[in-house]
Structure formats: C-alpha cells, structure tokens
Length: 278
Image (cartoon, rainbow, N blue to C red; front, side, top):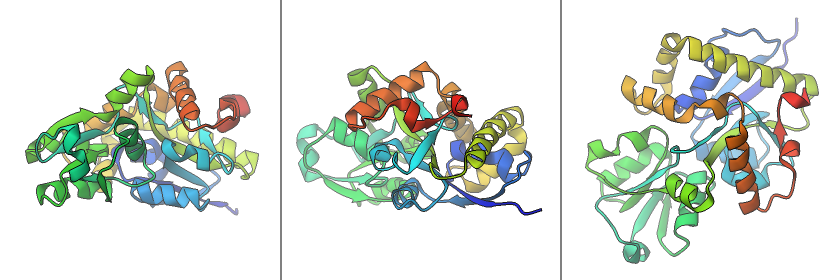
C-alpha cells in the first residue's frame, strides 16, 4: 500500500524530540511515511520562511511571515511562564556599556532576538550563531554577551558566566502574559485528511512519551547538546507543559498578546489548527 511521504522538521533540543519521539520510534501507527529533519532553530526559521517543509518547528517571532502559508498546530507549542531565554555575560555589564559590546544571538529570526530587542532597542554589535556555539564563543571572549536558549540556559554557571537578565521574565513583567517561544506549523494547502492525521499523531506521540520516558531518553541524549540526564529532565519540565499538550487559556493569552505586537490582524481561530477544525 502506498504511504504518502511527509517531512517534519524540528530542532534537536529535548522538548522537540520528546514531542515526536513515538513517531521517530514508530510506536504510533500512521498511514504516512514520515521523514524527520533536525536542524538548529534559525535554519528551521529560514526553511519555514521559504515555505519549504510541510510540518516545521519555527519561532513565534516570524509568525507574521508564516501565517498565510502555515497554520499553527494546537499541540507542540513551547510557551509559558519561566521558559524564556536568558542573557549572560563574561562579567556583569551595565546598559550604558552595551553600545561597545558584542552579543551572540541564536539567529536573526528567533524569538530570543525578538525578546532582546523588546528589552534593549539600542545599538549593540550582534553576532548571529547557532545556539550551541554561544557558550564556547563567550568562553573564548569572542563575544561579551550571549542569549542562551534550549539546554544551554541551564548550564551557563558551570562555565563561570554571569547571569544578567531573564528576557522571558522581562516580557512577562511588561505584558502580563507568558512567553511564546515557538510551535509546530503545518502547511495550509495540505489535504485536510493529512492535517488531521498530523494533529492526531502529535497528540498521541506526546502522550506516549510522557508514559514511556525511559524509552525516550536514549533518543533525547542522541540529539541533545547537553547529555546529562538531570539537564534533560529539567529541560523537559520547563518546556513540555500543559500548553504543549494542548493550548490552554494561558497559551491563547500569550499568542493573543504576541499577535498584537506583530500586527497580525487575523483571528486566532484562523491561525491555529485545533480539535474544533477536525
């Protein structure tokens, strides 16, 4: 029997892999032939902007450039309180020093970059690097500041780096809303049968992973930048929450605030593929 091929692109960070682990391990049946592409978040954003992949993880910061071609899946979002990127430095720096400093940012299109601009709209020399290269660049003093996401935000103190600001908390304090980091997007022009199947698969995969964490951990370690089990567990506790399983009121509030910032005038119901669309 013919199985339609479908590409799913995601980052190698533990929360993304956790969401689709059951699909990668073939623990959930589907009539689709799924092909997984793992890339850093900035590469994913560039692929999404070019409308290249049917299902793709992307930063919410570029939502305005995606929504005409993609819908957001109701399952798989990374958002919430206490999940934002952190700003660290080789030492403590004052805002007055920023114009004379270099900062490492994990991609021009990332939500991390968006949140930094929200905090500091002034001049600073920006160096765009894959997220896992920012701590090494700080250690080598190639940059003075760095924005850390994924696993690196949990381990920077081990490298004698100085915490400067939680960019997510800054957003939370200013907006009263959770931080919307990113989500999985699906092409609008896919057949409805396939879109419904992907939504079903993501839900089943996530629920299976939560019930079989021991089986999932080897897969997470295979792709993670930080392979210590306690770091991966902290990562999952932080980024896989109730809004990942299905967007709740808190999640919708975060997205509503963000769409206002991004000047997206569409109703959320038209932007999101959820159960009510099945």
